[in-house]
Amino acid sequence: MLTSLFSSNTPPTTEHDASEPFVVLTHGLHQNALYMEFLAKKLQIKGFHPFKFDYDSLGETLDQHSDNLNNWLEKNHDPNIAINMVGHSLGGLVIRDFIARYSQWEIGRCVTLGTPHIGSIKAKYIKDLIPPLIGKSYEKSLDGNIAPLKEGVCMGVIAGNVPNNFSQVVLMYHEYQANLTLDEREHDGAVFVYETQLPNAADHITLPVSHMEMLVDDSVAYQTAYFLKYGKFER
Image (cartoon, rainbow, N blue to C red; front, side):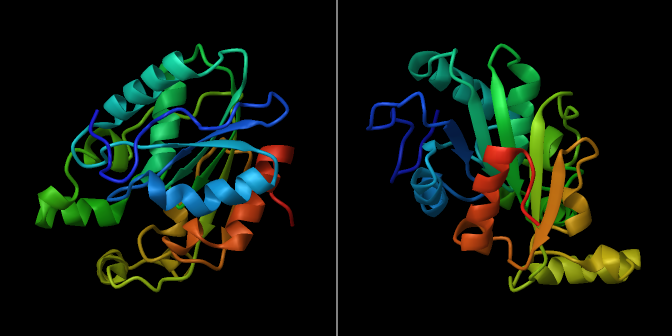
C-alpha cells in the first residue's frame, strides 16, 4: 500500500490501555493521516485511543482501502477489543465498506463527518471534467454505489452547512441546473447536507462548519466524542 510521504500506518506508540476505547480515524480524498491529527488529539484528551489510518485515496479503490485496514488490524489489533471508527468525507465510505466486508471484527460506534452517503454530485462533475482529480475514488464509492450500512451498527452522521470553499461553484452550478429547493441547497462547500443522509443512522446533526473546518473545529470534535460515548449527539 502506498502511504503518505509524511505519515505511515505504524502501530500506535503508546501501550493500549483496555479502558481507553480504540478509535480508527480515516481521512478524506486528497488527504493523508496528518489531516486527522487535531481530532485524534481531542479524542485522546477525552479518553480514547486513536489510530490514524493512512491510505492512497486516488490510486486505490474503496475495497483496497478496506483490505489494507483489515491487514493492519490483523497484525496490530486485539480482536477482543471493539473498534470505534471516525471518517471524514471519503473516509466515512471506507468505514462503511470495511464494516460490510469484514464482519469478524467487533464494531463499537462510528461517526462520519461530511460523508456523501448517497453519492457526491461534486465528485461526478469533477470525474467528467478532470478524471485524474478523482482517480479510483468514484466507482462503487463516491458514486453512491456502496453496500448499505450493516444492521446493528451505531453510526452518527455530522454534516456542515457553511460553504466557504472556492470549489462550491460546482455545487452552485448544480443548484441552478437541478432547480434545488432552498432546503436542498444547504452544503459545506463540497457536500450537500442531503447527500450525508443515511437511512439507518442512529443520529444526524448539522453544524455551522465547512467541509475542511470539520477537521479542526472544537464543536465537531466534542460531538464526535459525545456520540462515541453515548450513541447520540448532544442537543
